[in-house]
Image (cartoon, rainbow, N blue to C red):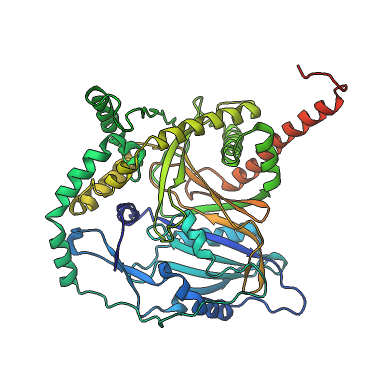
Length: 500
């Protein structure tokens, strides 16, 4: 058995009747070539059965500790029912992108069965042009964005002919699931050490909790952490990490500040990666800077159309992976940054420079957090109190308004084309979720020469995610035009002249 980390456990206890922390990916497969067979559920099911031994995260299920005395555990499911997890459906004609997005939003919004491994694989047929799609649905307690894409490698190939597989040795047998009495005993045995670990963890992490998950998004933590830092600077001048100042961001009110429902709306688009790289090179910034700046321009256009643009810049939550190269476990290895995005800036070029500066400053604050604080934060809340405290924080977040206006996550994907059972994947769209206190979510996968974006809003929101997708396309074209304008000016200058 493997115990969930505090962050993974938070992804479970923060759920309620309106909020489910599930995520997914939508692979659009090219139409079958002449002489090739269409992907079917049986083919997909057999593919999963042949490779499931390569993905431990897909074979494990939850075992909870009675009374919430300790965090839950993962145990390998000895009765894994692949036929339950692999499903199929068909869209009615004409099978448009909007029909597909509507069906995907419905599927991802439906809660997973927590008595089984937390994933589903849906084959969706009937798309326009003879295409099919594969929706991979996962729970955030078991994966983050990076580990979710790593899991995809189980079923994806780099060639249409597939690949040679490492056989399962020994054959999968599962684990014996402990009884509730055994889990109760395990929880009771852990109680004496919890206060000691919490005290030790709190001493190391309290000054930094407002920079660490899940406390980063918990109301009231920022005030306590800033006060602790001020005290530490007085008592421990020059102490480790005490240069961390942090930025008290004002989150402006927007049209998204409303209680969420259990239902979502999803839209997607694909833009050229080379265009984003050209913008990156032109401005001398990072690709992530370009993505965030492009999103700032898109959100600005979108809210101007709705006559809802605040005067102050919106605030984005930007996840940061802290996964190491040798960390092959699933679960969540992610922290977050809160970053002002220049939606108040009319100039596209200045939006890039302001975004670059905001992200640079946020990264410096993130790097100022010592590793000991990250480790200590995982013990600062005793598991016996964790469930009640987390649910109270979730409720407060919903009542106290926005913690941030949007979530922007940029996850590197496969650089070369991939295949599922021999079928080429044309696009790989991320499907995120939304939580109380945040307006909407945008996730970006880079894949095979494109940036594949997924946009999710609450179903009852007045916002149309398809309009945001179109605005992102326009925003990238606007930035790309700046690079061409500069090149044209340079080509007109006489030889030996200097640009003023």
